[in-house]
Length: 401
Ligand code: ATP
Image (cartoon, rainbow, N blue to C red):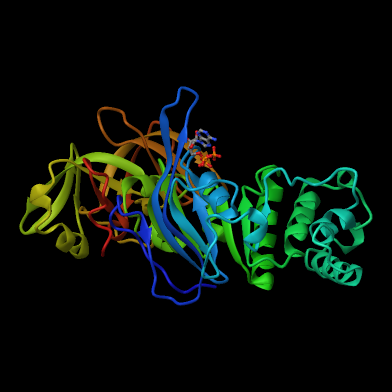
């Protein structure tokens, strides 16, 4: 597992370079421009620079159309960059065929041959490369055991469940002993429960195989649970790259803040008011005092901020009558009308209206909360976890604390 970590503070830079010498894959100044049907340019990816360490599990995540598949396909050699280079094992492979890159790809649709048995499907990539039979047998057995599908080797794909088919597709990649695995939404055809189970299995398999893996998904939970590091893309630009917890705790901008975390972060238009050398968040009856570390970050910056957005995650809002983890004071509470209560067993989701314009935010409170629809609930904010965003640029001005 990789220990290194970084974030890109500057959205336009789209850069993650490291001095680490054991770089397995380098995406260097990668830009891809497609022409659409009317001949106009579509910038799919713009100037992305990422160093991927040996053994690292790197996940590209972002909404549909953000450029993640294009990036993966370019590493694979299925697309040619408009600008930039792909370097694998210190070799510039930009002009090389996919077969010459030492990579193996696992697709969303498994791409298994229906008329072949599992054994034949798994051995196919070795057979076409003329490996000796004994080596083919050995590798297939080894991969099948690793994936716990050794008893399925003589079945055809139609006789397997979705999860088993996915394992065969993985097996077919593993037997090639590639330098890098590339995976494009490999779990998205599975139902929700199996998806979570396969996610855990993929984690275990990666730990055992230990190979560099580049993985594409639109699912932030999958990205967070699988990635040593997660690269968030939006509109073809790298927004932030770092360890999952870092992206959750210190999102670099409003896009990342809203994309990582479920339910998503609440955003509120507020006034940032300076009072007695400290900043307060104010709107209507809401009046919250920002903690020292946020204040020092805002110092010297706040005067330039005309409009700011207050961000707080649903799990950092608590019902004042139940909370034990955060002290309840006048400086960290506000009142809101309760519109919806959703008991989840482990928590309750409240949808509340704190302001007269009836905009809604959500709070993930204790299951013991007695809040009912129509009540006015007092919510406590864990002020150490709040974020302030520049409304103009979307930059999180409190990310460095
Ligand atoms: P999804 O999750 O929907 O697959 P994605 O993040 O993987 O999305 P890409 O498939 O990489 O996104 O596409 C990025 C952008 O490039 C999109 O605007 C897409 O429409 C465009 N694009 C991709 N392939 C082509 C192509 N062959 N010709 C023209 N435009 C393309």
